[in-house]
Amino acid sequence: MSVHRAARLLAGAHRAVALTGAGISAESGIPTFRGAGGLWTHYDPIKVASIDTFMKDPQAYWSVARERGPAVLAAEPNPGHYALAGLEQSGHLAAVVTQNTDGLHHDAGSIRVIELHGSGRTVQCLDCGTKESRRDVQQRLEFQMPPRCRICGGRFLKPTVVLFGESMPPGAVADAMQLAEEADVMLVVGSSLVVYPAADIPLIAVRMGTPLIIVNAESTPFDSLAEVVIHGQAGEVLPELAYLATMPGDG
Ligand SMILES: [Zn+2]
Image (cartoon, rainbow, N blue to C red):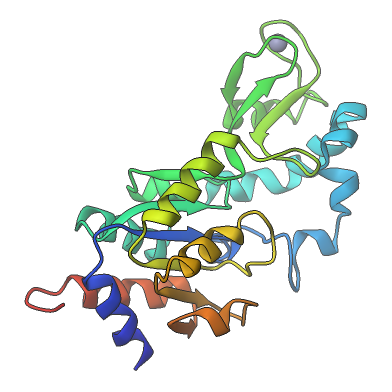
């Protein structure tokens, strides 16, 4: 059975790397961007979440954020997040590399988390550089649109996430690639693997001959390269995987 096969691979791993995408966050109630019912079926991403539009009209961005923000900020880790934290604690997993910006891996107790698309937990003033919590800015949206910097009054408060048209933080990308090169198992969770360069990360591992495990609700373009493909929910599959991989006397 594929879960047992994947668990055996993880049981023998000491520096596995997990790459997580929107699928694992969706199970915590965070609306996804792509796919059926995704955010981008309601909004045009180029209009709402590109750096060009943001610089022209931050209010367009924050109007959507006013609607979407509360659900994101209220979200809590699900059993999939906790299972990955457990695999790190038990010495099987070296790090989580994530395309998500919601901070739920940190909340679940994961120590080493590489956020390829930045973090939505903080907001930075593009004029003076001051950072403040997204939660505080979110509260101001009810009476201030767009929100202003509390220090300099600047009107370009940008979440510390990668918008369309921006490049990913080079340090995070370099860390992720190095982790992928050194990985002894690559575990992809809840990512459709259609966004580059994030999708390059499992490819690096595959080229090194590292076994690839994919846990995703739907098929991905990389399924044929994987050692094990499990179509299912992260919140159901990962706890079972972690349990089997860390059972005493197994692996
Ligand atoms: Zn400022």
